[in-house]
Image: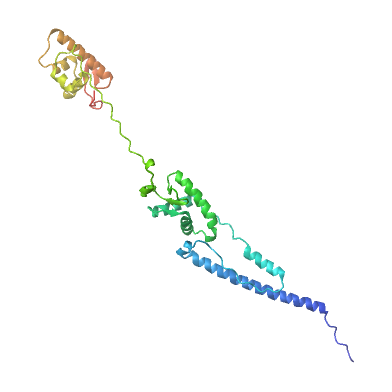
Length: 289
């Protein structure tokens, strides 16, 4: 029995499947090449992170990716271009305290040198493991911190050199304008006080009074010499005038010494132990009258 051959598949379906197969082959090629590019870039970044000299490069540039031959597939071309042009994610910078402390350490280590802001950015990034593509975030933040720190005398900006900093301008005397140099202040001489002579009308001539200059100083010397014995006006008078006094001179001297003992006690030159009797107190003693 003869049978007719089976029906042929529709031609349109065959063409559609062929297109799909071609599409998936190109999709596989696209992802393979994308993975190769990403792997190459990752190797570059890891090599730079482990090399100190990487931060001396003035800029960071990615190598241009090799063109992919994706045929007439607009969807794949658009997807690839969007992947390449997408910006890198924003990096969260360390806390302000950490950045400030790191800046101060770098400036202290380079004491006597002037450091540019670009160099400080690279050094801070290296110490705190900040990726190179975050330099656009690091630079304005450090500039702000440097300006604030100058107000707190943590470091100094270099005059006539924007974005240049040093630990202390005193290390560069040539940069200091003469007009800003502070002249040492002259110390004012303490006022001199002339000792008032004792009242000659009340006291007769006395060598000890002439020696000590004032009645207060003379009484203090007497009490100090006889310490710890307490004394009254008569005993002090006998010490001042060992040859004795007569008549009016004795009465004047007694009254002056009695008044001097009373006033000196109220001014804490010595201590009263009982009515009319006084003793020297070393805690209250001082040299000037």
